[in-house]
Length: 71
Image 1: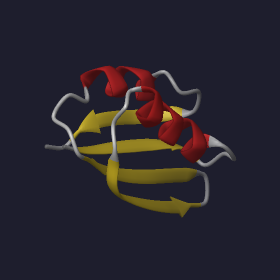
Image 2: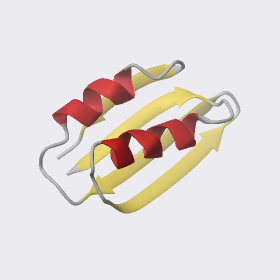
Image 3: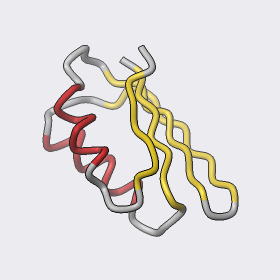
């Protein structure tokens, strides 16, 4: 699966994202981070199709603007 997380550009957000995947036992195959001024974008490829629970947790991170499964 590929997920997208758009968030306010704050320290520690990427750590929180990666912690969620670790807690869910989901391996990250690839990750791309881009920040522009006050906004950060992370595209994450994971080695599982079961990412709904992780998505729910990603949406709960303070500073999240949008999180969704791309495919």
